Image 1 (spheres, protein in one colour):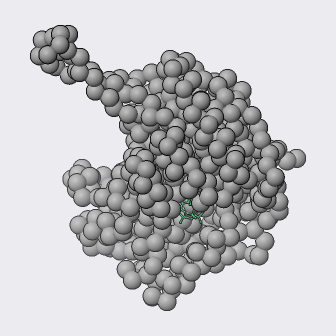
Image 2 (cartoon, protein in one colour; image 1 turned 30 degrees about the vertical axis):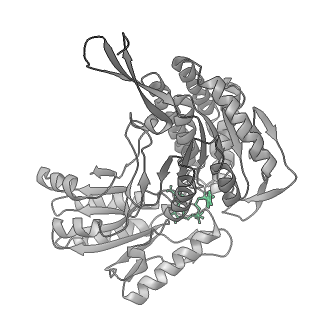
Image 3 (cartoon, helix red, strand yellow; image 1 turned 120 degrees about the vertical axis):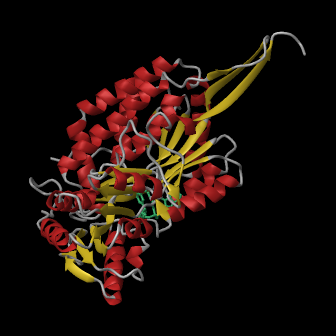
Length: 478
Ligand code: NAD
């Protein structure tokens, strides 16, 4: 039984097909599961017009009513969890259990921002008698948002939640390879009573859509999640129009394993978490720097658990890791492994494509990887871990910081002084100690260096979607 949805654009509260469409493939079988309409320029112009009208309406809706629509949409998505998860597994490949969790995480993003919608407080600045300085936060306008294929549901939920909670309208271009998650979000908001035009969903050729939308005067914020290369390109386009951006870009997360940690528990947690979503996560733990005194024991346990990962079609029970989302990832990972091997790295397990149908790749662990290997600098975005020994925490922190990225970083230790040194020294937007969780609805998430700027989630999340306006009011003319 297939519950893959019939795919549409969503503009001005209406579902729309177009003259041209492209296939959506199941990465486990390479079979076509749907056809996705491609937006023409006229569809994009309609979306801009619709979003401008949607903003006029929605920005005047009281925050608690905006919150109610978000809560209702989340409740509908929770009811539809199984249908949505099945569609995500079909188009992305991840195990059904992970797709179910992703749906719930998406709902939590909506629910968190619903609460935040009612708390976008301004402030009163102390002043001379007869004068009041009052700071207001107001919605920025129409958001052009671009979400990637690795989390078809939770990634677009982040941006939709931020925009709608703040009183903005949004034109979302979700990933063409995984459109069903975003489509289900649009259905839930439609059914929850969101006014037409507030949320618009388009698909097409990414570069054409971003180029067309970003040059519109009526687009007031560009929000993107994806690679640093594309993020840099979109930021450059936006700069030409002085349009602000929210950029969640790549990462190459270091994990510092100190000598005092529980080696077995830390190694198993690392191996399991690394393979989640087949490693296609911007916060995926990738560069493990392990104190030399526990390096052998840590590596042995890690490799054993990684090699035991059950790989298969995400719909099959017991599968822990599905295929990669597309063929590009197979080529990229194969090239990184071959280069590392040529540089002298040890391939402890994996390293190759599995079979010739579906985009399956072996859980892969490389050890003693020289700094000269490309994979030490380039985000693998796949089920590939690097384990290298270090002689001290200082050396580990130096290696952690030796990439252009600074998104998530992790440390395993029970020593408060080690934690303190990591807080001071590690260049990252998110540092997690003794856990490989980096992104929650209630915590601010985002990067430093080439991992982008702006934050999603936490109390900081709505700031990107709002402008700050100071009003100075003198009670008499001065
Ligand atoms: P890519 O850089 O071509 O695409 C990444 C995403 O950006 C896709 O969703 C794509 O549709 C979109 N995109 C590409 N060009 C665009 C443009 N001109 N305008 C608007 N959107 C555009 O790479 P890919 O092969 O799809 O993915 C591989 C790389 O992307 C990975 O190495 C990883 O670094 C990055 N990525 C990061 C995240 C994340 O969560 N930060 C998610 C997915 C992919």
